[in-house]
Image 1 (cartoon, rainbow, N blue to C red):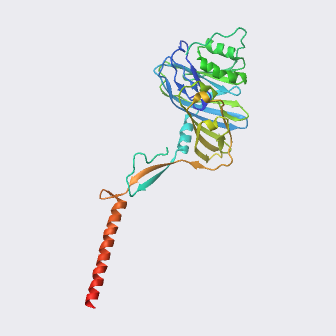
Image 2 (cartoon, rainbow, N blue to C red):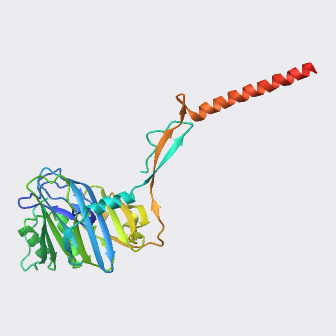
Image 3 (cartoon, rainbow, N blue to C red):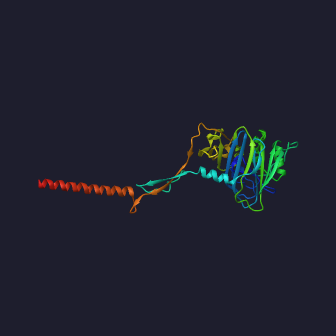
Length: 341
């Protein structure tokens, strides 16, 4: 469901009517969760990002754990987004394609160790008089999700609309929204409403919008307090590299690179942000220097033993014994010849 890809600055930030912002809120890579459940958290967040011409598509899916049924989030997009249901099967497909190759390492001399075998708040203040309200471009209901696309207006107007519609923002989230409003971005407001607790994987959503560059909103994640991990499946004509200013300050790993059957290139990128408050830019991608393929390798370890002993030392001892016996035999034979002679 929404948020994987969305890290995109997803700003899980509000709670539905009655949500107390004073309650602690767990963080996800795209923003801050708002819920009366202080222990609410996103267990996993993944996104598929693709671009054809000037049209970008982001499929987001997240797994959430909470004992309550109210929560919400807001996603910035460069231009108004068209929202629809995503395809959960795509995530499974790309996960399988990106999975590491397994190779076995055989140990002859010393036993393998356990280390072997792996690669590895308060209510929003009232809006100022004369605030410019955002325009509601579209509204859609997808299962437990009530999704509204907003564009235009100013920060006070956006904040007022969100408050009037049951969203309550922490001050840190409001601050994170400000740069996007100033740059005239649009927003997808997603209310997670359900008669039961939101626990487990949610259905993915798809957001499509026009943009000149392949971008994944992340600046709202500056409101988070803990380490953020973002997994993105990036689809384009060629292999993609992150080129934004934050790349050097974050742990960015390419987990997979390869050409798909449909001709597109899949680049799977994992980013770990240990200091979210240092986030200053969205994720921006550009064509890499080449389309070199890459796949991780995970090693499994196998001890080669003989009679309960490691094969290397065992065979060495046997070899030495055999050599000694042979040398001794030769020596005895030579001695007898001399005596006979």
